[in-house]
Amino acid sequence: MVELEIGLVGLGIAIIGSGIAIAGSGIGQGISASAAVGATAEKPETFGKNMVFAVLPETQAIYGLLIAILMMVGMGVI
Image (cartoon, rainbow, N blue to C red; front, top):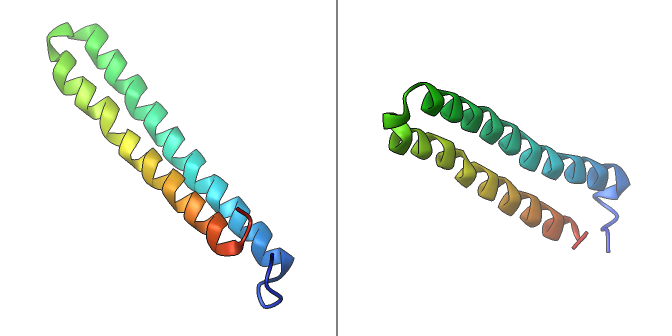
C-alpha cells in the first residue's frame, strides 16, 4: 500500500496535487471557451477560429487527468 518512506503526509499532498492538476486545466478551459463564445456572438463569421481556441485547452485537461492518474498509481492509491 503506502511505503513507509513516503508517509501519509506525502500521500495527502500527492492527492491534493492531482486534484489541482485537473481543476486548474478545467478553469482555464472554461475561461477560454467563454471568451470564444462571446467572440462568436459578436462576429459569427469567426466561428471556426473561435472553435479552435475553445478546443485547444481540452488537451491540457487530458494531460492534467493523465498526470493525476500517474501520480495516484505511483503513490499506490490506485
